[in-house]
Image (cartoon, rainbow, N blue to C red; front, side, top):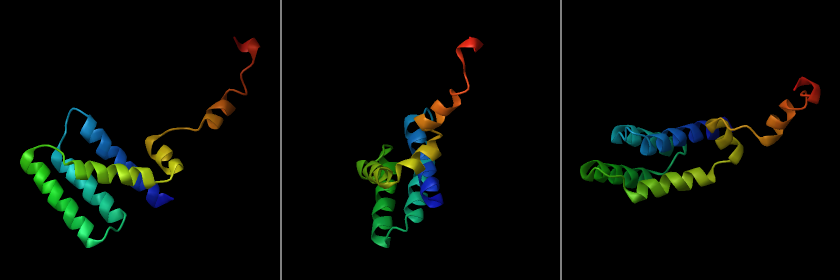
Length: 106
């Protein structure tokens, strides 16, 4: 699970970068390459991604193929790992914290 949490964190950084005010293509490049290496993608996939990233830098807009790859990676990761990476708590955990509150405390 540790590897999936790290992959989810890389994905989070990617999506934070593309949706944030500083859409740095170098940072996007690093996220895509890091995720591909973490997933141990075959050399053909790495070459295709690198080619798309170079084209993205030339055209100054993100390739749909790169976005598609990152979204498909996100859909394959275990939901618990993604929740951990994004800092999301399960409803059960939050509900347990309310067990100690009584009406008298209001």
